[in-house]
Each structure stands twice: as structure tokens, then as C-alpha cells.
Image (cartoon, rainbow, N blue to C red):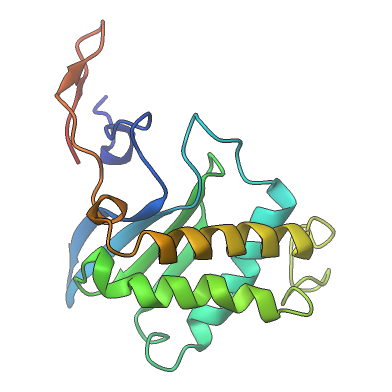
Length: 174
């Protein structure tokens, strides 16, 4: 079986940032999947599950209500490894082009008084939320993005030499 592209990126070298994970052609154009990496994989603890769930609700609500972007939002959701999120957008924009959108989305968390959709009728695990921890992670990432806005490394997957596993599978640069 072929290794999927997101597993072929060297996760020991990824830093927090905004990266293009993949682009796909569809009938009416291109959709782009972005890797919104909030913590360093395998070097920092994973994001608290309840905080991650709250961030998912808060930021999805922000994105789907942003008047300039809501028509292009396809998906916002957590990575299984709990180190970040995937954002899928219509179109072909660079990570720098969505920097302000992501920064504003994480900034918006600070003003939240509650988690939208955190009711049994709206959410499959409505008790698993932590707004205060979500605010902490959001502020941490917001500060990081602002401090590194001029650092091109937060917009490009790290480049590494091609690695080959013992069983012959090849890992490629992103």
C-alpha cells in the first residue's frame, strides 16, 4: 500500500505554522487542504482533548460566519494526533494568503463566553469541552503567529532528504 502524502512529511521537523497539505482538482476548480499546526509533533504534548474539541467548535463557527470567507470554507476539524487542525478551502491560496484569517480565527476565541453547539442536541460529546484551556491554546498560537509573521518557515513544510524505511517505503519532501 502507498503511504499517503501527509504521512510522508517528516513530523520530527514540523514547527507550528500554516502549511499546504495537499491540493485536489475538482469539477469546478481546486480545493486546498491546509495543515494548521498548533504544536510541534512528537516534541510538545498533544493539545488537551476537551480544549481541542472546544477550539473545533469555536473556530468552525468563526470561519463559517466570516463574511469574506464563509463561501469558501469546506471543512475545519482536528488532526487525529491532536497537534493541529485541517482547513479545507475552495481555491488555490498560499499559506501567507490565509495568515490573517487563521490569526483572526484564533484571536476570536478570547472573546467567547461559551462554546457554540455544546448542547446534547448539537454535539456528540457535549460534556467534553474546556473553554478556558481552549483560550489558553488559542492565545499561545496567536502570539506565536504574530511573533513569527516574517518567518517563512511557518509557511513551508520542512524539507528533508528522502528517507527510505527498512521495508523500502519512500518518504518524500512535501
